[in-house]
Image (cartoon, rainbow, N blue to C red):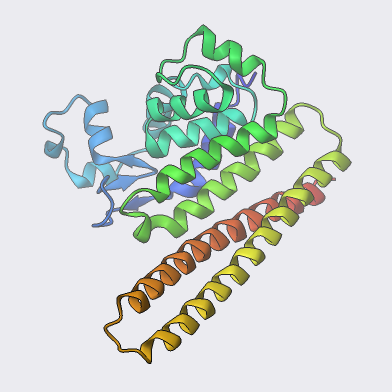
Length: 271
């Protein structure tokens, strides 16, 4: 289990959270090191939360942010009781989407009741995991699927995709290193992940191109019968939707390939 891994996991999360931001499209509004204005107000027991000034968020210290992360995210998902790597992915999912939702995703992966309550049955199911890299992948697939369902994906999707890819790859690398997997086996696993994601991305890009050409061909064929033909516009809309989905998936898999390649490069740098 990953007792004592909180600091290492937090370092990974803070790489993605950065410093103070106040993006108008972000529901969290003013945020520093990933801690939103509302979260900080609740932490300091200030109500209503708008009484907390944005300058207070801007001046948040690393020490206080660390205490908030541990109390509100790491402890609720029982990070100290999770396997190495699985703790990072669950922790990061909780930071992005709430601890209860992260626990439900975890439970879905391990086959426990999805009630958002981390009890002994959930822990027992985690102990029975045979293929940890596969479990880490499934957990990150679930959180990415949820993110894609949100209306603000169009604004933040690119950053979210890169973040999930990086956390996914780092989690698997972290688990392998902590459990004593040989360096050659680590190389093999990471290289397979790079190859799989890169191939999938290329196939999806080609599929998007094919769908675009097919849709365009159908439109030319039908436009001869009149530009108001409902079938023409229906085919165009369908082709556009297919292209959009394939492009998004291709970009996600490109980010995934890059993230695993980064972990492979870091492994090679370690003497």
